[in-house]
Length: 286
Image (cartoon, rainbow, N blue to C red; front, side, top):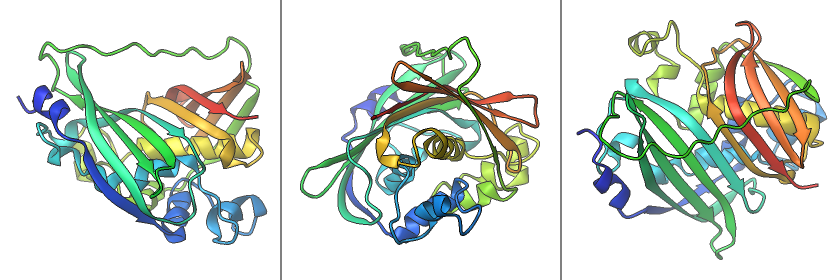
């Protein structure tokens, strides 16, 4: 079997040191749509090293060198054409610095769930400052088509329903046709997001946007519109990748503020509100 669950979950966590500079942060922010208008004060806080703040979703690219590629993990031998990102969560313990070194990072396969026709690989990672101060925890659910049916646990049901009323905020964000090409410079080189032939072999008419790019785009819009542009207010952010998004489309982001949490739904304007992100919640401080 291409996924050996016992080997994958029993392997020692990968550990290493990571670092980043303001260039890495700014490149990531440009990849998730920052910088328009280029001289706007609200955008310069993401794109100019003076007083630079860091979106919490930068955590999803900061530690990728420690985790390594999926196919390099013990017990896992899969075809990248069968891989889709199923869900993501980040928990922020302290604001991410604009530049950092000697960050202690770990990554491990926490679970492999059996969904019948597919498997879900659950990756957990964390990062702390050199003195042990926690920065973030991250949890990714990777959907692998054709690798289920091995008799494992199906995993928990985590359906979250949005409130049954009109959204408190509706935000529309235009994306660039080269959005995926720009985002992949932060480290996700999956050809699905750049190579038309690879995308067609995977069942798509054209390359699609990274799920984590949609994830970052959505949080930026929520922070800017609902949280006063203060990234430090974000404490936890989780979602399910419910559908695809094509570079150049317009995202419609609906936000409900209820019970001290923000419930969010992201869709494509051009494709009749086809859902992109669902079961999305942002927990924030006052």
